[in-house]
Amino acid sequence: MTDRVRLDKWLWAARFFKTRALATEAVKGGKVKLDGATPKPSRTLQPGDRLEITQAHRKVWIEVVALSDRRGPAAEAEKLYRIDKELLNQRKPSPEQALAGFREKGRGRPTKRERRQILRWTDQLTLD
Image (cartoon, rainbow, N blue to C red; front, side, top):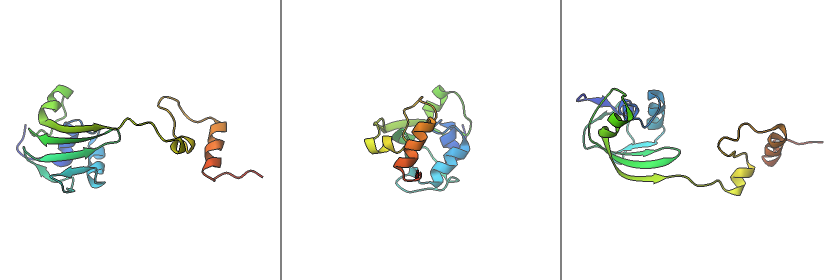
């Protein structure tokens, strides 16, 4: 445990992002709010800071409890924060998204026929 840790490094150590580069990209992209404001990745955290993290599968509001710049086991990472609120995003896509190329998880790459249907739907393929 340390007394000063960068935001991107803490997000990586707390296992919110798989790599530090992804954490940095998320902070720069506005997916992480610190006390309601959009911080820089180099911003130092303190215990008591409140974060709002938006990921593809969830949105979570947390309070920083402890600081660490070392990525350890998940059980250790859970001690770094306290979850105030969490919203899971598990919605099925709309029919329009399905026709525009959305694929069920685990279904693999589109077949040649499906690719043509996707291109036709998005008006990128015209057959004479």
